[in-house]
Image 1 (cartoon, rainbow, N blue to C red):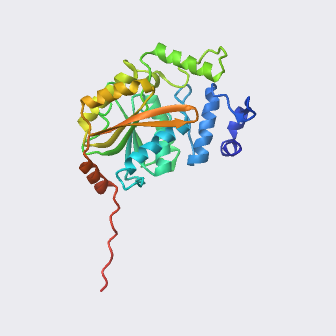
Image 2 (cartoon, rainbow, N blue to C red):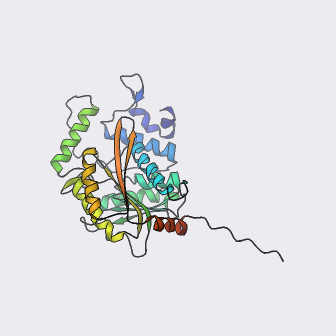
Image 3 (cartoon, rainbow, N blue to C red):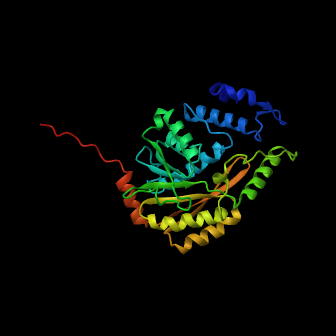
Length: 305
């Protein structure tokens, strides 16, 4: 915590001793969480500037970093066990939000280039501000407006454009009321059962927290649309909020006959999560993908006279 405060001094005012005698913050306080995230990004990822508008989603950085770590392992499977590095690896973040967390971590950790899609214009303005104030992001991270809420990839992936991996943190809830109830449970859990009213849209705006039909409907649309871009992406993936929804996700995927489906468990602290990944490329096509996009070409040597 001392190192984090040194990286971002405003965090100091948010740090208190918890019941175990350790320095911590009040995780039910959105401002404290934002200060912690800012410190983590500055300290571990050398980010010059990061901020989000009030009441927008402030994601847990360790969990997001874990997702990208396992996604990098997926790519390494077809690269002789070595994670492909650098801007030649292109990633698509569906619903990048106002926080830009996946592109930030992915670029700073692996050097990957990112396209983030987003339906909310305020989120795009926030992201563009973050990019403008971090020189290393410019030319490596961009955001695109999804004009039609019902679309996932259409209008984002362009003709003759290719991505090595898609990541997605879908809206988990099916209604505003369900999202608000989830926020209330979150605050109550963090407050050790004390009755505290959750702020409106605690930890996220409406489009970040819920969509018609919820997570299952969103993932179904994502899978259906991914079939139309089967040769444009090596690995599609999405977080799944509950283990009980994994079977439904796999059943949906099997209807569209991808060549491979993987369910990858993750764990950060006491939190257990998972994501599902799928590809429409055969093993031979995956090998060709690696050879054409990632394989380092031998440098030409000058012939001696």
